[in-house]
Image (tube, rainbow, N blue to C red; front, side, top):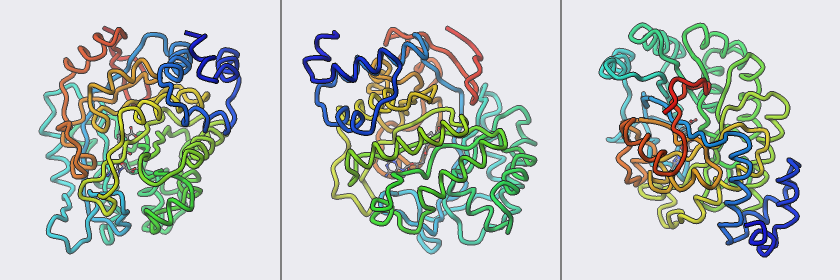
Length: 364
Ligand code: V47
């Protein structure tokens, strides 16, 4: 295997990976540009097994998208809608509570709550939603509001991000999901999501959360107009922030789905690029404990293969996922825990049910 990596021209990177040495941005770009997926996978798997052995994590979770009304209207997004759109919706706090109540019989440990940047829902709505979810299911971990939403809530509250986060935590917030990061590059943001919080702004919110002891996730939306260099710069910014705070739990590469978006003329991502994004992230993000292959976006079959290309997590049972679904995702968005376990076992890995913070709930 090592000869294959050397033959692929990646011998120096192999040496670094084996020595646990940090990769440079140039190394990262070379990894993205190789088409020797087996050599790349071998490197990523070395890191994966060093950090996580044979374990493959999954979680019993539920997604709730409280509203799709959004003032940012990013070009890559099919979920966000103008308030006047016939497809626009918003849930009342009681409707959100009902969604959580519907699944009380299931052993769900996490609810993942995100929405758009709503023009006029008041700050109190978000606090009430968190409290309401906790009323219905007191034990549940609420992973809610991307850094972009948090910055918006701070504006609504007229308070600093730190003060706002403290109030959200008091109302029930447990951690922050990784969305809204997109690609940090100003060039990409200007062309695809110019109204959105900047990359720097996103990182500032994440770091403020980490300083309060809150954990958060990180993502990158790939497969549209970004260059390999821009991908690596994004990863490097995350790695630097993680050096500072250590507050990121996991990194999730998100495969761009073009259908029903303003960028619908672009092709879907290829399986090779999906695997590359997992593998390069695993090699490059040496200070991230986990890399998630989000099965809803890349499909359960490729998520399973990704467990040999750097990923150690496949996310969870999810259900009613809308962001990928509205952009042409074909996975249906729901998976039974038994299916997840079988998928992991068939990949030759050890299924571990985790909670949001990667505490082990059950090993199989
Ligand atoms: O921020 C939007 C992305 C994100 C599209 O933290 C799209 O564990 C693909 O971040 N095609 C939201 N992606 C979802 C997200 C997420 C999902 C699962 C787990 C976690 C986690 C986070 O979805 C958005 C944006 O980057 N997105 N439109 C699209 N057409």
